[in-house]
Length: 266
Ligand SMILES: [Ca+2]
Image (cartoon, rainbow, N blue to C red; front, side, top):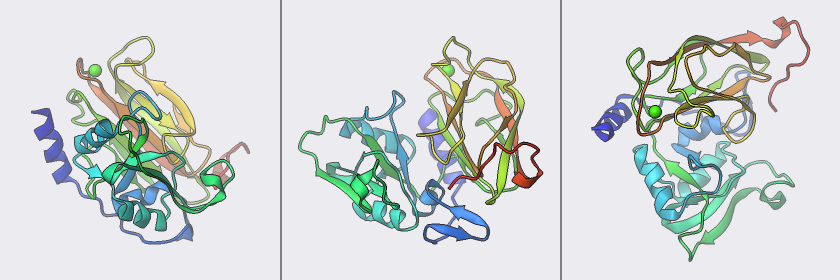
């Protein structure tokens, strides 16, 4: 039943972002990375348990859960060529492991550019992240570039479904910041927010920039990004739901902010 719901949601929404530009600026927007993942339909996922926790079989299941499949080497490379850059090794098609690097760096990719390829793994029980391919996006999540928008949990104001993972990637114009205002918040409560939670990342992905994890029914405080990108991650487990959340994000020109401790992601 849940699966049927997820598939219906997948079919209902298709991604329209098809910009094919290289690393750099276009229309005042810094195209720096994961935003373009949707254009090529490739995205990175890690286990609910954290980084490098997925066997090959589990990696396949993660992609299938979201209605997609493991990315092929060619799909990963196509995504990389339009700016997809992730510093985390993941499974892709045919039991291969690697990651896409656009900008050379000493801490990632050995200073090389391209698909950093670990090759076909003989031991499929090795644990890595995963690269999935799905040209359609879910009902929950997606890439949002509007100047302001209301975002809400799936089904809001009804209770959200179990077993959801939603990623909202917000990207506004270069030289802007993002303000989040929570309008409604009710997520299954537990001490460490292990069951269900909403996480805020002051970053273009959920690897860096962790800024907070929320559950319960207390309205989180407003949040102001330090740059022009932000990621929200909503994860729910297999039991107990709640009313969910509703929030609004607004783009603000950095020059209008009174303090000087903001910067733009580069
Ligand atoms: Ca739950």
